Each structure stands twice: as C-alpha cells, then as structure tokens.
Length: 384
Ligand code: DAH
Image 1 (cartoon, rainbow, N blue to C red):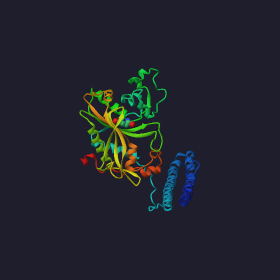
Image 2: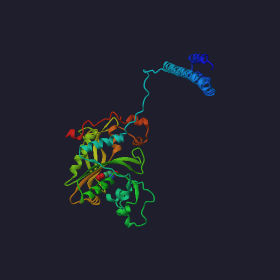
Image 3: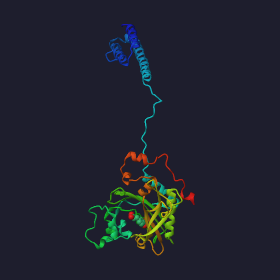
Image 4: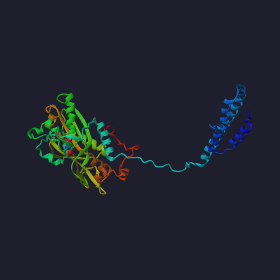
C-alpha cells in the first residue's frame, strides 16, 4: 500500500497557500473530486484483500477528513477576508443629505369638503351621497322640473345616448320611464330626493332630515370660471315648523366658521328655483383688498360690495311629496353651493381651470400638507 502522507502534506500546503475561492475549489477537485487522488485511493480499496482493506481504509479516510477540514476552514477565512475588503472599500457618508421623498398634497377642494363636513357635523348634519351617473327623474322631474320645464335648458346636461325611452312622450315624465334615461348629474340636488325617499321608506310620511351632500357635478360649459366638472355641496333640513329664519341662521353660522370671521353679512334676494318656494339668492358682503375679494363686512359699506354666493329656499311642497314626505306636516329649506368657488374665495386662487389641470407645481403651492393640516381655529361649538 502506498503511503499517502507526502501527497497529503503537499495538498494541505497548497490549500493553505490559495488566495482565492476559485483556486481553493480547484484544490478540492484535484483531491476530493470524482477523479481526485483521494477518491481514486478510496476506489482502490475494492481491489484489496479484506486484511489489507482493514488496514488501509482508516488511513485513507483520515487523509480525506484532514483535506476536507482544511478546505472548509480555508474557505471560511477567504470569505471573511472578502467581506472585510468590501467593507473597507465601500463607504457610507452619513453627512450626505437624504434623498428627497416626494410628498403629495391635499387638493384644496378635498380640504374645503373636509372643512364643510366638520362645520356641519357641529350643527348636527350627516353627509349624504348619491350617484354621479344619475337618471332624469331624480335629477329633474322629482325636483319639480318635468319634461317641458324651461329650467332644464339652463343646465347644459350631458345625456347618455340611447337611454331615452321609446316614443311615449306623455309617459316619459313618469318615475319608471324617467329612471331609464341616464345623464351626468347637473347638480347635487337629486341627493335631496334620494335621501328623502330613503328616510320615507323607513318612516312613512317623513321624518326630520339634516344632511349635506358634497360631490361632483357636470355641465357642458367651459371658460375661466366654468369647468365641465365642478363641485357643489347641497344642504337639506326638514322638520316641523322650519322657516326662512332657520335657513339664514344656518348659512350665517356656517360662513362665520368657514371664513373664520364674525363680520359675515348676508343679503337674501328673491329668486326662482323650481324645487324651492319661495327661493332666495344669497349674497355675502366682501371687500376688495389689493385686487382680491375678501369676504366680510356689509356689502353697502364703503369699499365693499355684494357677491352672489349660493341658491336656496324653502323646499317646494311638490318636492316634499315626490320624496314621500307629507307637505302639510313637514317644512324644509335647502341650498346648493359651489365648493370650488368657496375654495377660491378662502384660499385666493383665481382661475378655476387650474383646479383640474393636475399641475404638480400648482398643487405644491395651493395644496395642503397631509401631515400639517390647517384646522379651523374654532368649530361652531366653540363659538356658541
Ligand atoms: N341646484 C341648483 C343649481 O345647481 C342650486 C340650488 C338652488 C340648490 C336652490 C338648492 C336650492 O338646494 O334650494 O343651480
């Protein structure tokens, strides 16, 4: 039997001298690989007599283990050295400024809608919603604007093609037929009807209502002060013994909280809306300060004027009826107000179209930080 000691010594020396993982692997293959000399020695055991084998086997196994152990430990050394080298080369400069993470802003319209909900919550109003794809009956007929009503023409409605009922003029104002004709709602007023019907379904004849309905509305109109999509907030209050005084107080209280000033003066002018009787146009006094409209003060005072702010009135009996309410028992008032215009007035933007351009520079300037939101300096409760 050949003595493997010289080969073993040579291999251990070679392993010790390797300076890369690749070189180390070559040494492993030379000794322990399929055709490596240790493997061949192990194979040679098969041709030996049992006595010889008993003597030779432990010696060969010992050589095998010694080499495998040497490779293992050299491998650990080389890997640790590689990591050390990497750590020494790669430096992290903790004094460098951190990369800027872009942070979005809250759109002024969303901000104002939140403020509206917050203020009206103080006054006991819930937020109601309705679909933007609305039907003709809820958008017009139930609001006392039947097929032939001239006020329909003022709405520049986007209708969905192919949803008109076949023929039947007389029937087309009926609830079922009108609900087949679809459009993009032209105002938030249909939410009045949906809310009333829902409440009347649970309370036959009606029950007290106090809601606001903020949302998107659509009209085929576009210039510096009109966009085809804009935002309104509808208000509806129904109870027993409700009158115009409640309407005026509610709007005044809201506007004081919203503009955060006490000197809000309202002027109610007679007007006409099919869904209210009587109807009023509500103006607010403002001053012109450096070309900017600043809400507050009496519109007839020096340096002041009136600005039309919203439409409102006492809910028309016919609308109460169509909502399933008994008009002999319940009275109510309603209003509709442009949210975008309210945002422009409070936060000083002058072009409505910029609201919907999605220009990040505009949003960075006029948007609100999600982490540092301006909160109203005082809610309605705090003022009372
Ligand atoms: N819906 C009306 C519009 O969009 C606004 C309006 C006026 C709403 C009077 C009302 C109201 O609820 O009472 O022009």
